[in-house]
Structures are given as structure tokens and as C-alpha cells.
Amino acid sequence: MLVAFSLAPSGGRESDDSVHHAVAAAVRVVRDSGLPNHTDSMFTTIEGEWDEVFAVLKKATEAVSEWGTRVSLVLKADIRPGRSGELIGKVERLEAALQEPATPLRPDAAAEPSQGA
Image (cartoon, rainbow, N blue to C red; front, side, top):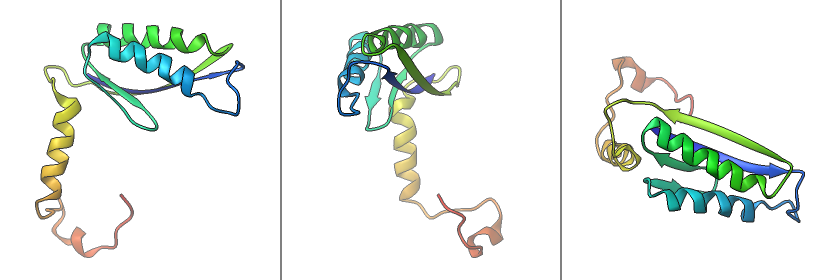
């Protein structure tokens, strides 16, 4: 299972609208968990089994709660039983596909204007 999440405190002590200290507290929990993870400018993604991932998310949420009176949590999960290594595997498959010619499901789709990515 992959879970991408974002945590942010509100009603707290952060100044100048920045939440980087609270985010750092959450990321520290994730990294200390030992589970595969990746952090970018918007989300942290963690990979593992349901119970272990959500235990880490709970601890990360508790760490962020130290920085405010409320916490906002946004989650997106890819639940695919029997798969592991998807944190890297999905990106590797994407990169490989970018090197190949596109083969649309509908043969006439390539002639139609793009509707966005």
C-alpha cells in the first residue's frame, strides 16, 4: 500500500504562515519508522502494510498537533494487495513508458486534440 499524505497545523505558534517546523516533525516520524518513503514539496508518500502505515500516520499527526490546536490531514492511498516496492516501481514504469511510443486505446485518439495531462 502506498499512502501520500499532507499534514498541516492551524491555530498554532508558527509565524509568517510557514509550517515547515511542523512538517519536519511529521517527516521525522516517517523517516524514523524505517518504512520506504519519499517527501516532495506537497506530500510525503509512505509504503507498507495497512496497520504499520496508519500507525505511522497517527504518530506523525500527533507530532504535528504540537504545533497547533487543529491538524489538517489529506490522504491518497493506492491499495494493491500483494505488491511491494511500488514507491520506486511505479516511477520506473512511468519513465520506461516515456521512452516508448504512445499506443492509445482507441486508434483515432492520437488524432484528437489533447485535453491535458
